[in-house]
Image (tube, rainbow, N blue to C red):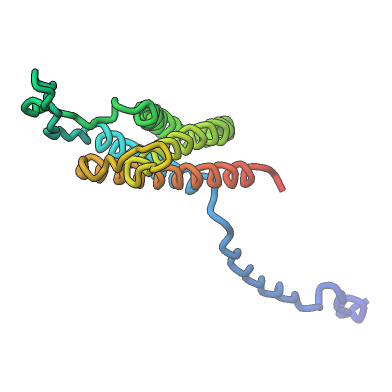
Length: 216
């Protein structure tokens, strides 16, 4: 009886094995930027769009130049030309429908950049509703790009005629007489081209943000 009591239970006698050490998981690889950072970049680009369109608009609106022009006088009684008269000619954007369209398009784009920048800030604060904003941005950014690009091309075509003239229809080089106005015009068109490039970046950014929100 005592011998049986001395027999150790194999389960009890077996020493407890220590659990194997847990292997540390490797750090996750750095992935692409999340939607929140993309929306922050969207806000910055829309602020840049506002600055560009506002500067181009102000340069165009205030690009006025007045110059004295000598006009031949009326013929006298002896069929000789009379004394010349002086007239003041003013170059301004209202002189051309193309430039009026250009100013109107810049005004719309400037106002649009303010509204969409506020909407983009709202999307950053409320990421749950960002998908609807992104779809809105894609559609209207394309519309705004077409508007600004067409206005820039129209103004650029008229500006080129004013710079080089057209010998076929006897149009002179208007910029030879109004060089200051043409310099302001060229600067406004160049800034508008930068605004077109920013709109292209905004469209690409909105499409990429929508792609990020699609479950893989």
